[in-house]
Length: 557
Ligand code: ISL
Ligand code: CA
Image 1 (tube, rainbow, N blue to C red):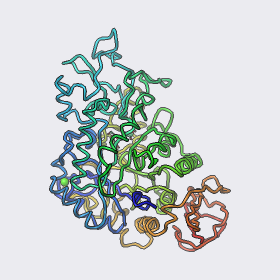
Image 2: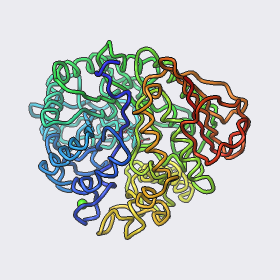
Image 3: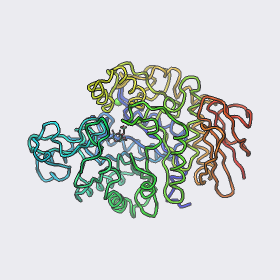
Image 4: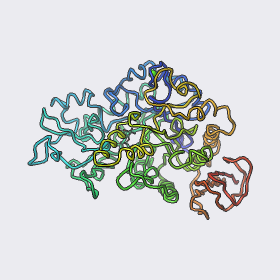
């Protein structure tokens, strides 16, 4: 296996810096805090850290609105602190991947300030006049009907010029115009600047949205909705493969080292993802697709409740595993800073908390692909029992609440939906200990600490043999130690029970067989034959039955 694909046997750990560890007591996580917890990453055994944005930012979307691509926001520290963190990680054999947010900038970025004032960089963003016959600024005068990901139209009127600018996310996140070669060159310069500083790659925010159809046509309007869906005109857009190949040439070609590029690609399909990740095409190493985290979304979006059907989830996994076999590579994730906590979402964070967290981890980590662990997932952190909107910080949830209540939804129901799906569930402080503020900060945390920190925390689990943390450590070790986990093919096994995920992996004469019960009931299985390598229950149990949320893996030579 080519060393160029070193990430096949790697596990990535995502740090959301604002919520990881606060080094200076101002209530906000920072680089100094991360440096105090490198041992935790070493214990877990991860190979790579993906660091969510730490660049200067007004903070409209917690750092995903960047006003300077070549600096560190003072709230997180300094460039010296950053270099120190990079050195600490490298000294322990851990690589560092930065977040690259270049579909849009902050409205305070000097490029946009220049563009808005109509100077040289006007064409660096996407400006359009009002719809013909309409007066700019009036409802419905937007250049097209696209909605923003954060509610409302994707256009902001600028009275000074009489034009609108496009923002797929908040109005404070104007979209860059990738049609302009100067924009592309400026982005590649930023990437080269960070790589020259020693980092090991990039996670690329909504990278499959950067190429818009220049005519910007109206999108389809779902029944009962006002605004349209622009995705067909900007998702996996017309020049996306060209741009990614150009980026690869301008940034990575000829650069010595072992890098990782992972694209965040909402809405992409298996067929397009095979193109993105086929090594022969030299675009991206892997992408995050969203199909498995969309299975419990209702027709009107993520906040509309829809029950999980486990067989649907498993079919999604199977389709991506087989679809990217041969050429291409999967990223494997349950959680990130945008998703609710998986043990609460697809597991059982009450009675079967430990069993379901470890079962879900097994189902993911033993697939073919590169697993990502989001901070706190390795200790089974749960969703937060948000008591009121005052506790919420996320722009998406707050906008959703205002819009939904504005159109007649009961405020209590809106909050219930946010409690289930809101992004702040992922952003409560990392639970280091049972102490004050869960050991996250000596000050007042910027967002509430989950009251269950007393019971669920890293300090306790690092001491326990049968903790969720110990189990994740074992999963990481298996990927490192067993070539079949890193390189084996994937074959789904039919199972007598619909809620069982059964599959095998084969490599070089070795077969790994896996069976995971994704339900809280005992279910029948076809017995696995081989040497047990992993189990989340003590004692063998009945070979033909999986206990609630039981996971087993065996090896045959
Ligand atoms: O969580 C979502 C809203 O339902 C996703 O659609 C999310 O907005 C989308 O995955 C893009 O996410 C990325 O870009 C956003 C940022 O808010 C997210 O935190 C980031 O991961 C804009 O930069
Ligand atoms: Ca701080």
